[in-house]
Length: 80
Image (cartoon, rainbow, N blue to C red; front, side, top):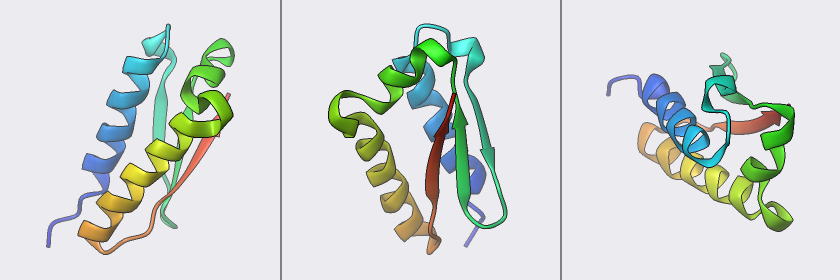
């Protein structure tokens, strides 16, 4: 099975860029242990997290679904 890690990073990056006001400040980095760091501008953190964390929870759900297909476990960390 091909490595789907770049696809997962591209998915998170594309979704995050559509949510924020400054898409040029969105950076996604994947580490070897399956941790994906999503870095956004300080004033856009609330948009990525959402009300009561609903948007962040939805992003993590997408990561879990993608991870099940790739038989990997991903963890999302949002950084300002």
